Length: 326
Image (cartoon, rainbow, N blue to C red; front, side, top):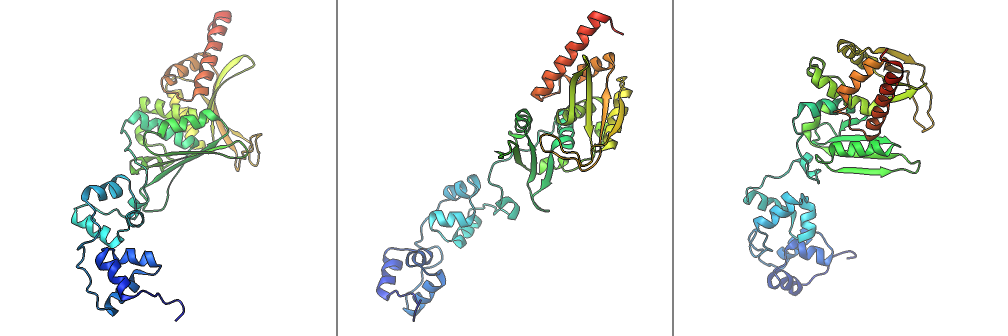
C-alpha cells in the first residue's frame, strides 16, 4: 500500500538487536514514527528490550550540563543526543533533578536577583516611572520585561548599565535611528511593575533624593535660558509632580508648578507624539538650584545630565561672582 513503511525482519533485527539502536533512532533513520517500529517489533516477534536496557547511556553529569546548565529543553536534548524525551524525563527523576515548569522552560539566559539596596531601588523606581515600560510576558511568567526606546545613545547606554548585571540585554536600532532596548529580569524586580511611588520613598528624604535622581535622569533637564540656569522635570502624571514639588519645598528648595502644557496631539521633531497634556515643575532661584544640585549630584547617572548639571552650576557661580548672591 502506498505510503507504508517497508522494513524487513532481518533489517529490523540488525538495527535493533545488533546495532542496539533505540526505536526512536530507527524511526528517525527510516522516516516513520516510533509507534510504527513498536508495531513491527510485535509483528516480527522480536522481543523488546527492557526499559533502559542496552540503550545509549547518559550520565548524571551529561544531563545536568544539558538540562540544568545549558537550559536545553527535553525536545532539544532529544534532537542533540537521539535519546527519546521519555528517557530524558525518566533520567531526570532517577538522578533527582527537578524538571522545570513552563515558566522556567522559557528562561534561557542566567538572571541575577536584585541587590536589595534601597537607594538603588528608589533610583530604579524613579527611572521606571519616567522612562521604562515594564510587564510580565504572561500572567504566571517568571520574566519581568523591561523595554524602552530612544534616539539618544546616552539614554540607551544608561539603561543597559542599570540592568546588564541582572539579565540579558537586547538592543536594536531601527531605520529611523531610534534604538530599542529590552531586558529580561527575574521576579525580584516585580517592584517595577507598579507606577506608584511607595510610601517608604515618600517619608524618607534620602530615598526620595535617589528616587528624584532616577526620575530626573529619565524626564528632567538642567539647562540655561537667557543666561540663567534652571531645572525642570515633566510628566503626564500631575500627582507625581505635585508630590515632588511638595517634597522639594519641604527641603527649602523653592519649586514652582506643576504647570500644564497644551501638548495634546503635538508631535515633536523626533516623531514622538503626546496623547494628552503634559505637566512640568521648575526650580529657578539660584540658592534653591545650588542646594538641589548638591543633593542630586551624587546620584545622577545619565552622562548628558551630569554635564548639563555642571554647566548650570558653573553658570550660577559665575553670576554670583559678577552680581552677588541675590
